[in-house]
Length: 367
Image (cartoon, rainbow, N blue to C red):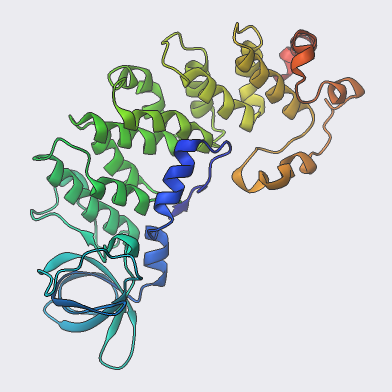
């Protein structure tokens, strides 16, 4: 199980809206970590008493815990106060349920999204496709994501419009990464539905997936009219994997002539935030850009490296704490300190200084 940052370096309006929406739903990590039992089953005799949904849950399969297929257990779930409509009796609901030990003879259920009255993740009616099958020993959250993701893929076959289920499953992976999660999002990215393709690409970019970064220009060129594609650009603010392949892919995108709005700058921001030795040649190239924003990223990145600023991560953003964690390096001098940061009123002066600095140190610092 691998955790990934759950907040971007530069929050955008779109990302803030996404966070606001997902704040009403629990992440998969939260649901699994709090649950004593994670099961696939069908809720029957579902009704609401005040805030509580009460029902009988027939167990079909277990993903975690001790409940056995065929068992029927009594369950109650705090739905909050936001359900606008509740049909009683509600029709049977088959899905993935997250149960905790409750009162004697009854379990409590954590709602997937209480505000919307979504108590469980729906699952596919058909068996899992080969690409989404998993071993019994797989991580529980991987099982949940693959099962729910299969429901998304099944639904979109007959529904060309975006579905809330796809967003719900996407939100379930917040803060989590694994080969299984990437496998699902690659299927999304290969979808013939442009909106689902955009969701898959965005989530893979967020995870710094190198094959996706290398194909991104070509894919994004086909998504110019897709609203969901805008989110792809903002996902670069999560990329903090300083391996050489990731950096090379980002460097290629930063220098791209594709004309895709925001793509070059997004890749440059990721390089600047990492500012490792391997990023320096790409950051130096930015100093020759005609775009002041790109030159700014180059100046900042080189200055961060010379001044010993750690990789800029989400946890360092409040109060700009990352600036207080600088550790002077052998490249930290009176001059690099003077030209640390960026002054737009002295833009040419800053660019000339860091160009000269790179020429003097390129031989020893080039990977």
